[in-house]
Amino acid sequence: MAIAFGALLAFFVVAVIAYPFLGSRRYRLASQRFVNREKLRVERLQVYRKISDLEVDHASGDLTESDFQSQRDQLRVTAAELLREESGPDGPAMDSDEQLEQEISRMRKRSSRSSETGNESK
Image (cartoon, rainbow, N blue to C red; front, side):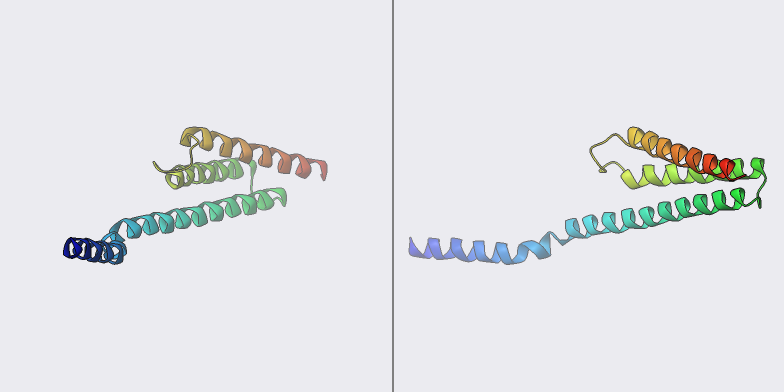
């Protein structure tokens, strides 16, 4: 009885010690997903900065209305695609399409506010 208990205890100790090494693939995958999401988030924020810079250029008169609209639309589509990738299949509980629509709505409101303030200063 004591030998069986000792063997069981030894097996348990070895299993507890070996678990992080055997399960490391799962941890690596989770870590890789986090790194990928972070890279996508950084790219998306860079696109937002480009949109903001574009709005400043338009307000200062460096861009025509048609150029501004086309470039802004392209950047918005890029941001939406990045957001969709970022949320991915194991993303937040919110549906990715719903989140995408909210992000587009936020950008439109922000854009309309900035264009209204630009028109008032003229």
